[in-house]
Image (tube, rainbow, N blue to C red):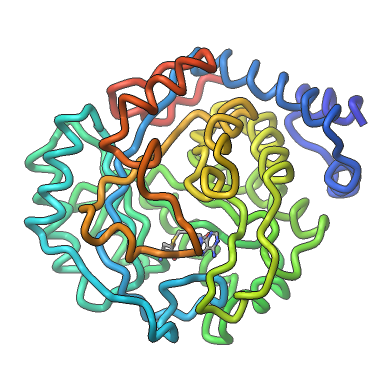
Amino acid sequence: MKALIDQLETNRILTKEDLVQLIMQRNPELDQYLFDKAVAARRRIYGNDIYIRGLIEFTNYCKNDCFYCGIRKSNKNAARYRLTFEEVLGCCATGYDWGFRTFVLQGGEDRYYSDERLCDLINAIKNKYPDCALTLSIGEKSYASCQAYFNAGADRYLLRHETADERHYEKLHPASMVLSTRRQCLYDLKRIGFQVGCGFMVGSPYQTAEHLAADLLFIKEFAPEMVGIGPFIPHHDTPFAQEPAGKLEMTLFMLGLVRLMLPDVLLPSTTALGTIDPQGRELGILAGANVVMPNLSPLVVRNKYLLYDNKLCTGDEAAEGLENLKKSMEKIGCRIIVHRGDYKPKS
Ligand code: SAH
C-alpha cells in the first residue's frame, strides 16, 4: 500500500482501482505514511503558513431541501434569521481589526438575497475593504448571476459537489436537485474567473469506497483552487437523524490524498472536523490542510446556523478566539498569516 502512496506523490494521480484499495485498506501506519508526505508537500509550497478566513453565516433561510442539512427548507424547527447589510459590514469591521483579510459569505439559498441585493452587499464590502478577498458560498446559481457577483467584486466561490456519483447524489437530495446542475455551476464559476472550491462530506449516508475514489478523481479533473472536506454529522431534524457520523480517520486520509493530488490547493481543516474531535482541526493541518475558517457571525445568531448537531461556534472555532487558535497552530509548528492568502500555483 505504501507503494501506492509513493506513486501518488510522484504522479499526483492513481487509478480508481488503486484509490479504492487505499481507502479500503487504510490503517494507522498507512495514515502516518501519507500524512508525512502530505505535510511535506504543504510545507514545500506554503512553508509553515496557515491562512485564515472569517466566516459570516449571513442567512439560514433556504429554498433547498438537502436531506443531510439542518437548515433545509422542511426543517420547521430551525429558527430562521438573516443578517442585514449593516450587520454583515459589522462582522467585516470586527474581522478586519482581528487580522482577517478574507471574508466568506455563506448561507442558505435565500430568495430575499436577490442578485441585486447580493451585488450591493458585495460592492459595499469590497469598497470598504479593497485589500480583502471575498468568497461566496451561497449554493447553485445561474451563469448570469455568478457573472454579476464576479463583476461586483467577489473573488472566490465555494460550492461543494457533495458527491461525484449521480446515484449517490440522488440519495442525498430531493429529485429537484441533480448533480449535473451543480457540476455545470462549478465549471461556469471557473470560466468566469473565480477561484473555485468543490468538495464533499466523508461518511455521508450510502457512501462507498468507490464513491470516495470518484470524488477524488473528480477533484483531480476539475482542478479547483480550494477543496472543502469534512465528516458528515447527523442533524436531529433531518431524514438522516439516525445515520452515523463520518469518521475522523477517513476524513484525515482524504485530506492527505487531496494534498498529494493537488499539492498547491487551498485546503481547510473544517469546522465539522473540529466538531467530531477536540483535536480535529490540528489533526487536519497535520494531515495536509493549510486553511482555517473561524466564525465571524454575530454571537446572537451563531447557534442558529446549525447544519448539523453540536456544530462548534465558540472556542478556537470562533474568530474572537484567534489568540488561542494562533497558539494551537504554533504548537504544531505553524503560524497564522494576515493576508488574503490567494491560490498561487507553484508546482
Ligand atoms: N447553501 C450553500 C452552503 C451550504 S453549507 C451551498 O449549497 O453550497 C456548506 C456545506 O456544509 C455543504 O456544502 C455541506 O457539504 C456541508 N454540510 C451540510 N450539512 C452537513 C452535515 N449534516 N454534516 C456535515 N456537513 C454538512
